[in-house]
Length: 95
Image (cartoon, rainbow, N blue to C red; front, side, top):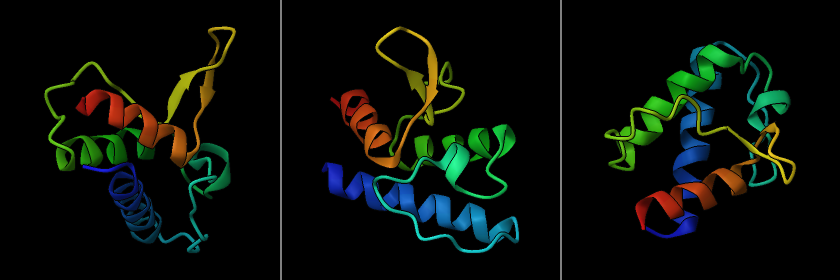
């Protein structure tokens, strides 16, 4: 699966979550940081979308992953990731 296909799936899942939550449909791009950029995208939504995405990517065996939308910065601190960064992480998991 290519990085572009992964980004497309991520954007689909994020859009679906926004729609199901009754939130305005904010345009989602690879630069979108779901945690912070998308109205109503909270920790519970993050976990739900993570589960959906892991299932679609065939990575549901990675049950230790709570949220694909949280990563580490260069200092090792937790930070919110944009769609492109999440896609990069998924590519690595699929390798």
